[in-house]
Image (cartoon, rainbow, N blue to C red; front, side, top):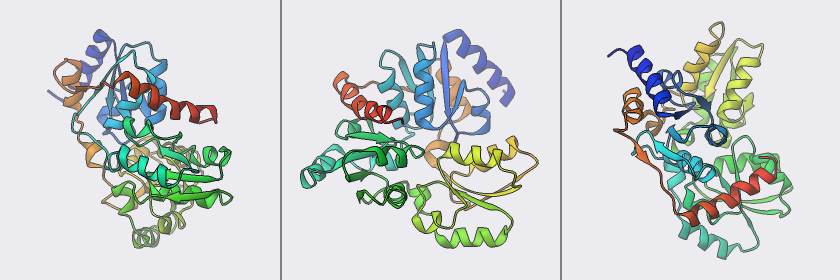
Length: 305
């Protein structure tokens, strides 16, 4: 089968089976083309909640599928590739955070949305990379324990100096691997290009950037800008997607190593098999986990996230 033939078959099957396909922006181009919704993880979960479909197929990683299930517990949620996890989301467990809460009982625990459902049950409020500064600034408590990404936390702390933000060593190993040298080299190779980076990158990298923001924020900035050249400091697929979207502009990689293996685990054939009922993994969560995890998401929503 050709790629086009597989895509056509997926489009037929998803309509026949009443499946809503979500594809995170880091997915391959051929998967984005057959998705009902594309974008950042939390935005996708909100789109799934409002969609009429009773079955949702998440082309992304496990914590994203869990968030879809938390917001839409009545729906059947399928993760396209059972081994697609997230090192950042899975690097801390409930026991570690409970111990930290005992050590810092007067701190509000702020969890990046890139955490497991279990971890969300012991946190006070969630944030996304685009809403973190806004949410933290609005919290009544000045003492914050930010988990798990210390780079995103450091970015927030710089923007909200009036808060006392305690960081925990953790984060995205892919973004964290990018160094100041990578940024300086890319800027020297492309002196006319603006540097756009994700706040999961190290502070030494974000301080050199012309724009720091979420994946969607980076894409929107590049599309709307009157500039013609950009260095993309997030998963390398974004540079490719932007090049298709803006063929008259030029997009360069900040580092060729900015590749998320977990996001790349899902293939178009995986999606096809899922639509045939022969692949993926159905995400199930205990009702008490859904209820407890939903509380910190609702707290984020209440603060405008």
